[in-house]
Image 1: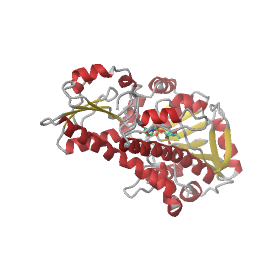
Image 2: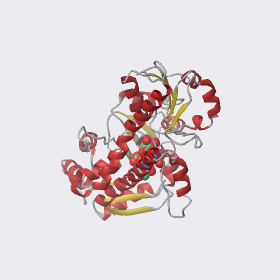
Image 3: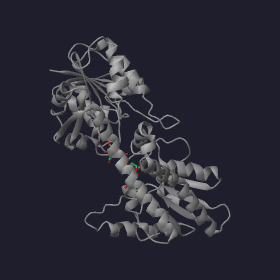
Image 4: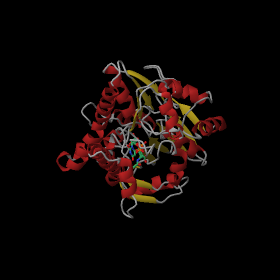
Length: 406
Ligand code: SAJ
């Protein structure tokens, strides 16, 4: 039975470790977060990701997945740690470097190291290879190294981990072949082999493609505001064309992927990324655009100390994840401007920055209502019911879930 050591038990590492442990691998799951490791070992971890908590608790109970704070010898090491942005929008590779260094005492001849974290082009064959060579093992002949980017959608991770095609980029063909042996035990999609740098770029292209297309939709929403058109109707009708698929406008791009990955390309090709840079700035301008719309609406309401109701705080629907959330940024700005803001989000349980209200309490007597996240629970609301509870009548739907209103 091959042994796999997964470093980083976050939104990619933990589900991957669980799936591998169910495929006749002995898996050691390593994380530096002591509280997380304890919670996992006690079998009472919780997660909004459908099915993950049960799968993790069962895998750990079976003994096939062992959560630990430090690595140990294994056949394969899989690095699934975060790669956030620094203040000046460069890739912060601290976690990747620390994870690689933590492996050095445990690496043995014929081991395989797989980097799943999203990184700028050249990281695998550059900084990562250099650190691993400190083990004294020769990369390509004694130690194999590949980059296999993840592409699962939070909220549907366990299904997409199995169904999605995978790209494997080896530092040499033997490394790619060796990595494919691992992924083909659970991945039901196609597995495409390439070199490490191409695989790094493919991942960044996927999210930059999405970011640029979201920016196009966001720019359309600004244009339609100016021309007094309903952007949702315009996009819906344009998408009837067989080769047009305009994405959804929104209050901005959150999360730690689409908002981040384009900057990893800009970092390596600053002069060649005019379009990507512009797309990032359009997306980043959306929260301010929404705040200005709210202020205009509130002025029209013309009441003393108006109440603004905000629906949703997470970065996207169906999750409690607040990382990079434009909704949170908008609420903070409105509060900083001194407005009375009430917020509700059915997915947020222990939010402590400011009080959250029930939907009823949030809407009751409000002068302006702002829909910031298209949670399913909000889609099911009858808008007229909301209006009947409000004092004012201004609804700003930044997600187009109530198409007729705008
Ligand atoms: N958003 C819009 N309009 C849209 C789609 C999304 O405003 O039409 C916003 C969302 O509200 C959210 C942000 O963009 O704030 C990102 O949303 P997302 O649906 O792209 O979800 P992520 O960032 O959680 O996942 C993406 C996915 N990438 C692609 O679909 C190309 C996922 O497959 C990646 O694995 C993930 O990034 C990642 O980890 O890289």
